[in-house]
Length: 166
Image (cartoon, rainbow, N blue to C red; front, side, top):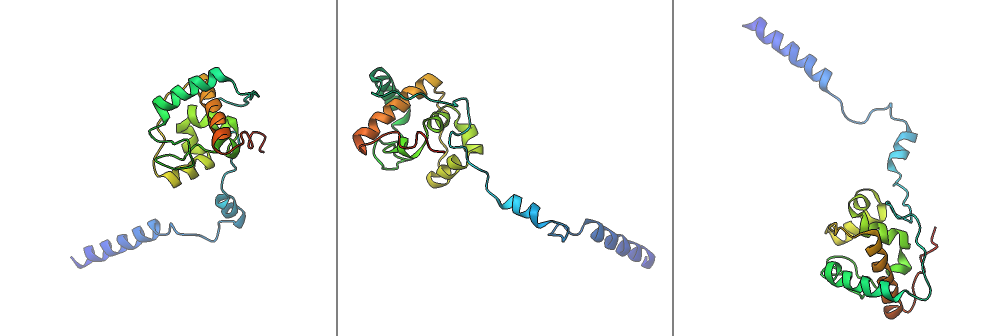
């Protein structure tokens, strides 16, 4: 019995040594630690199919009408046209803060944007509610963008200030 206890104690000691650790080791280089600490760089155009948007001036009235209808059907429950945040952020001034490509990628590619885009992730942290994928097409997203541009002219007096942001 005594020999069995000694053998079990020895096995336990070997097991603890072989499974121990897991904490920080001196072998981690400072460069590797610095790379891990750097936040990923955000692409001001976001992540998705939309790489470039040609903005019109004057605004395109037919797209505004379509965009307003889509807003009322799919967006108005969570987004107001003012700067008031309800579930999602208010839309006032959005084209002055975000590039048109980013806005359209957020509308059409929301799941990937929330998973990988640092700006979208920051919005998620602020709003605490994940934007649902509404299944909006690229063409409908462009109409929504045009509606947002018109809303910015009406609510904050200017539009597209972020269009050429790098």
